[in-house]
Structure formats: structure tokens, C-alpha cells
Amino acid sequence: MKKILVAPSTDPCDIKDLAIYVKELEKQGADWIHCDIMDGKFVKNRTYDHLVFAFLRKATSLPLDVHLMVENPMNVVDNYVKYGANSITVHYEAFHDIIELITALQEIRRKGVKVGISIKPQTQVEKLSHLINYVDLVLIMSVEPGTSGQTFQKESLIKIAYLNKKRAELGLNFLIEVDGGVNTTNAPIIAVSGADVLVSGSAIFNSNDRRQTMQILRGREGE
Image 1 (spheres, helix red, strand yellow):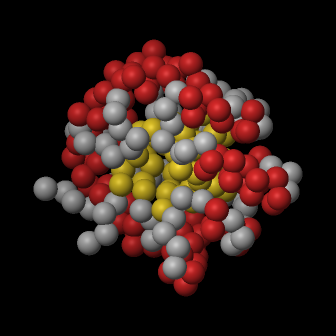
Image 2 (cartoon, rainbow, N blue to C red):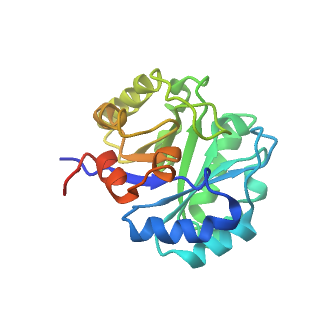
């Protein structure tokens, strides 16, 4: 059975409680911590910056998966590298053209962190065909980024399956990550479609038993 990684999102948690929440997630068995960085411009909401992120790095030894939902990601990448990001994902839509985007992906990798590319729900997955050679992960947004608690868009399953097929055809090993409306009900079909990493915000944050919820997301309930 393929191992599914669970990356709880920091998004639903109040900023003053983030460090405590992250420590608990590590204790309860999270694989990664997904850090949603929003600037209030690229998406309507604003979360936290690299200074708060630095406190999260001190709070956990888990891999910190940084998702930059910002207008000019390359202006801030160094801040997150400096404070211990393990992976940094930028948005396809944040760049003017493919050359600029490929250059950015290569630059992030040279900084010694894993690099990812993400697309919003309205962006065609085929646009990533010439980019998947440059990344360690592809993040499919299954809701419009910016607000936690939205409903998973089933059309995302087609994108996940497309990437899974391309990965096999080309002999690549990038991870497929899915973020938005992921819960214990839809996790099995998301995993079957080809996802490797499930980002979940509200489903974990609002759970009375976060350890069990993460196990169910992995498809390993009762272990």
C-alpha cells in the first residue's frame, strides 16, 4: 500500500496559538506542517510572515512545507529558506511567463530546499506539462485559495489523475499534493486518483481526536 503523508495546514489556527498547535500536531503524528503564507493581494486573506514562521520552526522538528500565496514570491523566498523551510511552493499564476517561472524554480532548488508548483482551480493542469521536470512536488488546489473550510471541488480528481499518469509515463518521482476541502470522507478517492500528500485544515483542526483523523486520512484507521 502506498504511504500517504498528512500535512495539517496552519490556516484555521489563530496566529497566537500557532506554536502550541504545531507542537500538538507533531505529538499526534503529523508528517509535515503545511504553512499557508498569504499576503492579502494574491489571495484576499492575509496570514503571517517569515518572523512568525521562525517561531514555528523552533516549535517543531517536522518538515515545514511553505505554500507562498503571494504576488511576488521570489521577493520573500530567502526569508523562509533562512528560517528553515524544507519545501517552498510557488504559484503558476504568480509569474508573467514560463521562462520566469522555470528560472524561479531552479533558483529555489539551488537554495537547498525542495521546490513545488501550485495551480488554482481555474488553471488547466496541462499548463504544468513543461514544468514537472523542475519540481519535487505539484500542489493541486482543490478550492479557491485564501479561505479555509471550503468544499472540495471534484474536478480536481481529473487533474490529480492526469499528473499521476504523466509521472508514470515520464518516470518522474515528484509528489502530488492536494489542498482544499480534504476530509475523512473524500481522502480515499483523492489517494486512489494518485495523491501522495493530503493537506487538511478544518478537518483536523476541528477534530476531537486529531491523531485518529490523520490516521483515517492516511487510510490506516485502527492502526
